[in-house]
Image (cartoon, rainbow over all chains, first blue to last red; front, top):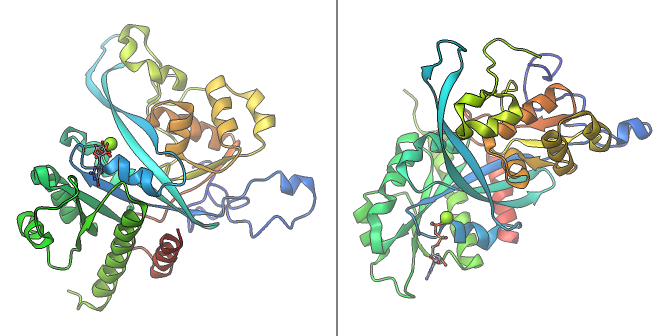
Length: 226
Length: 123
Ligand SMILES: Nc1nc2c(ncn2[C@@H]2O[C@H](COP(=O)(O)OP(=O)(O)O)[C@@H](O)[C@H]2O)c(=O)[nH]1
Ligand SMILES: [Mg+2]
């Protein structure tokens, strides 16, 4: 580790104790001012659901930046190692991720990451899920089954999630309770109607998610251990 | 610079691994904690930009302001894994600093969540 804190710890997991959380720029002179400061903590929530469920649309509705797209290479390394050069042969596929950003405060930034729709990209879900606060799962009632894998994933990982039932044709033919039953999720999991194109609706979903995460934590706190 | 386990880009391997040419074949970042949301910012990009390869200079320019690793990858239009290797190099050379998100294994902190909640309500 080349640039850890001097004591080898990562209390804030910052890259450099000298710069990382410097209390301000009130230091002495230009040399100090030339040093950048990273005062924000980045956090993330995931937006999941089947293909066409409205993930990218939802991110765009609340993001302060036009949703960005980045690609990850799925590299299958080491399937064969060249005898002569020792170079591993690789085959690659790319998987695209859409994401947006909401600056909550100078010291807190929330990222929204759309999950890749296809299950063959599970490897990417692992990285996405690492440290995620929670997830919004968009359920498209025209093909409810397409969100089952997401629901399974978050249940298994014990990542708190909320179901947003996207109303595609203006009307939602199924009551939320029917959707809850079909998805077979716990009673505490909020299932809410939404419109991914509508900013207020998406805000409402995010608020429900954060409240649900907080409730989950409080329950975990008071639950008897062992 | 040669590190054990580091492999060089091999012409014979063909265009499928071309993106790794800019990392000289390396597929793993030396600096841990470089995740999608890890924030990075350049240290004096106008000075250090001249000392590095064009891709790294581009990254330093993009990071004149703090950005997440994912944002950097999107803005320089390189795959995430490639960008992580380059950012890792830049951190080791002290041309960039980083700040990771909360440690994954610990439950999120209620004060922080309340802040997120208040922030979304105010949007
Ligand atoms: N009526 C309606 N259409 C939506 C809604 N959300 C997304 N769409 C539309 O559905 C299509 C697919 O949405 P997209 O966000 O690309 O889905 P993704 O594959 O999950 O990212 C787009 O044409 C959107 O405009 C919604 O809540 N209601
Ligand atoms: Mg999409």
